Image (tube, rainbow, N blue to C red; front, side, top):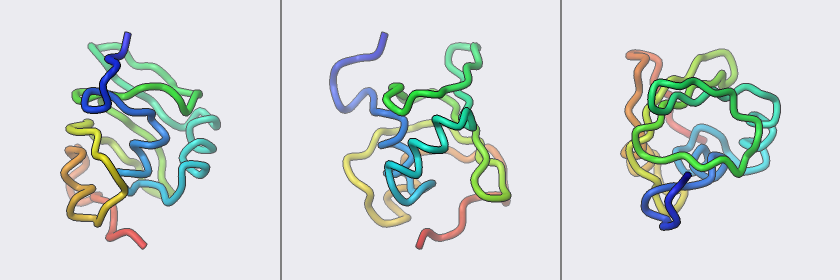
Length: 104
């Protein structure tokens, strides 16, 4: 189903960390395992419960982060957990004014 190259897909837990939504992979894995993440791909919505699930550009990811809803489209995979300005290039936010605050 997913491509084999690093440029076209990434594990969901890794991507959430690279995009700076969550601080650690284990925090991302707990969020995913708790059934808090939904993915929209090709018109089909799926609740994701496995952190190894592969996301790719074009996927829409929705989940609760603290007290706010995060609803983004994946634009790129990234190669590291870089600064906020770099992480912001990995997604398009669908909730204007609800953009994640500068990471810690």
